[in-house]
Amino acid sequence: MKQIFRLWTALLVLSFGAQSAWAETRLALIVGNGSYSSVTQLDNPVHDAALMAQALTAKGFEVTMLTDVGQTALNQGIAQFGRDLRAAGKDATGLFYYAGHAVQSFGENYLLPVDASLTDAADLSLVAVQAEAVLRQMRSAQNKTNIVILDACRNNPFEAIRDLNDNGLAEMKAPTGTFLSYSTAPGAVALDGLDGNSPFTKALAVQINVVGLPIEQTFKRTRIEVIEQTNGRQTPWDTSSLTGDFFFEAKQQLTAQELQEKQLWDSVKVSDDPVQLMLFLRSYPAGRYQEEGRQRLTALLEKELGTGPAAPSDGAAQDTAEPAVPAPKTQDTAAAPEPPAPQTPSASEDELIAAAQSSGSAVDYQAYLDVFPQGTYAELAAFELKIIKEKAERAAAADTPVEPQTQTIAATPETPAVADLSGLTFDTPFPTGGAPIQGLSISEIVELAPMFAPIEGIPEELWKDQTCSNCHEWTKEALCAQGTTYTQNNNVRALSKQHPFGGVFKQGLRDWATGKCK
Image 1 (cartoon, rainbow, N blue to C red):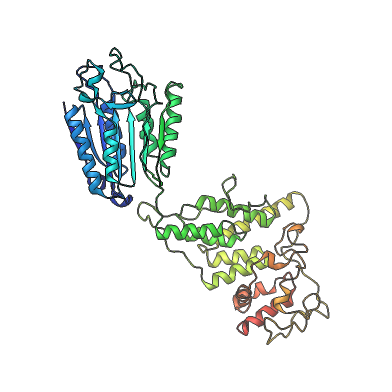
Image 2 (cartoon, one colour):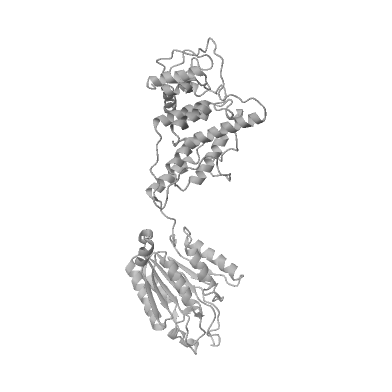
């Protein structure tokens, strides 16, 4: 009985909201013949056609499906398919799928309608439909991409007829812009399948759903699966003359905000600055790079504090345990799928965290958390406090004195505790302070090696004979922000802490910042 189903793309839009996912028009004619009247019936072609129709509809194809059709209906369906394809324009994609009996004679392939009855090989073209007829319709449309899939040759229903005893199909020449796929190699027989679908169509329907696969890879994966499932008895075959790329579903195009997130991640993931990673993670709490970013942040902090292996330089996440950094609060992605706009810390936050990083003091990190318990750098400060505490506990367990968090350099006549540095600029030399800073400007001093570890506990090889500009992003703007913290009343404690270049240098930064960092 003839059954014709038109599965329009509009139905897909209503179900999945995906009308704009494919730029080009996609048309498919699917034929499944199994209820033959004069030759062996096949159990699965109608099921295979339905499975393929479902898979292609989900990929934006406007599908016409013909099942158990005779010669007249099959010819009419192919002719209408050609008309639709020509009307769709040159950018359209056409796809023809056939499941059922097919035979070859004198190098030509024929698709068998369900009413085909044959007693002499000479009558084959009168009762069957030439597969070449489909290629002619596609060629006449002159469209960019055409795909022909033949899941036929399940057996030869005319083996007893002289001159029709060849197995399988003959290989056809693919017109330019055409991809031809056969369920089995030329001259070989395909299996009908025992579970409602043929091995070939069942595997193909799965691979069509893999996002981002070029069509060549889709059918290569199908071939591998069929060979495995049939223990090597069936090897799908394909040939191509495509001139462009085709994907059943290309990788999803990023939105402007997703692209911004990716671009920022690409720059941050190769940075050795934990603050940049911290800012990124806080800016995109529900982003796709949270797990990888947190792993890298943990590795960077452990490296900086000398408590773990070096972080990978290429930004790749390591296989580490769950990081000690508390997970940033995430949003309900179902309720708010768009990530929030990047958050910018306040100037006072920057100043407090800069002071804590400069001193390496648990007191200063705690001072930041007291003021900004949910701040941009809260996880960073909490992590540093945890490391400081663990080191103190290890030192106490070993019954050894704990090194002070900051070292004090005895004042000498050349390094007075308080110096008059008013009027100091970025490029004028320190008039006092002793070695190594006296006679050098701020811009020159930051290129020197520190007098002691900038953060307590860092191994010597990470700071000894290294310039401080390698440890910190000590640009003029960053130093100005640091100096500004020393001008505030609530940061007198931070100003009293020792600096890798001594207390006079801190006073110089403060007086320089007081003069608006000229």
